[in-house]
Picture 1 (cartoon, rainbow, N blue to C red):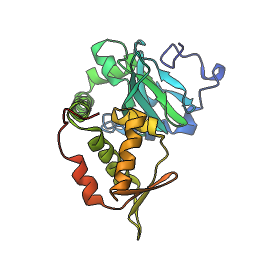
Picture 2 (picture 1 turned 180 degrees about the vertical axis):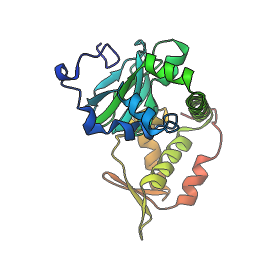
Picture 3 (picture 1 turned 90 degrees about the vertical axis):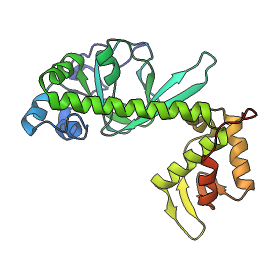
Picture 4 (picture 1 turned 135 degrees about the vertical axis):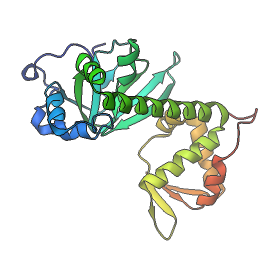
Length: 256
């Protein structure tokens, strides 16, 4: 499978590339925590090594097992990182948005990409070759320590994800998913906290580590208990306190 991690031809010859100026690469790099420590002139120099990319929704960016030749910086849109089981079941690890990076871990351990990445939305990215990124970390201790902090945060996040998937019931994980969406996107109305829900039940299942049927079953249970109300592509939180209560607790032997 051809992915964007393979050698990159000239911008003029590849339709997926976009002119660097249209992406404002310096401002894109400045949003990344470990590049933000650089002064303007060094950011400008670093941006000269970047190649701009545009990927369409559902276009593969990285296939698990691909060699890592560089770092991707998300400029706009969303990139989904996921693992796929042999039976086709998908587990979403994280969705990276503007200011986030994809591919920093295998740059340092020398291995291949441990997960696949696909565009969850139409997205634009900057690609920084591995050599330039490693040279920067070797020569700038502030960048190196910022990278360490980022990798430490990723470790904490993945640790919490393992805990969530192995120790929490599906109902708890679904409740947390709904609570987080309400906090990020919700608008308080007379009916409750309303927010859009674009994902299908299968997509929600991939994000919280379960299957579509269990998502459907637990959504119906939340509706029956008066915790939420669903209207097509909208969710209304009727009882946030009860939703928060659903988040607490450990997994029982009878959990699905």
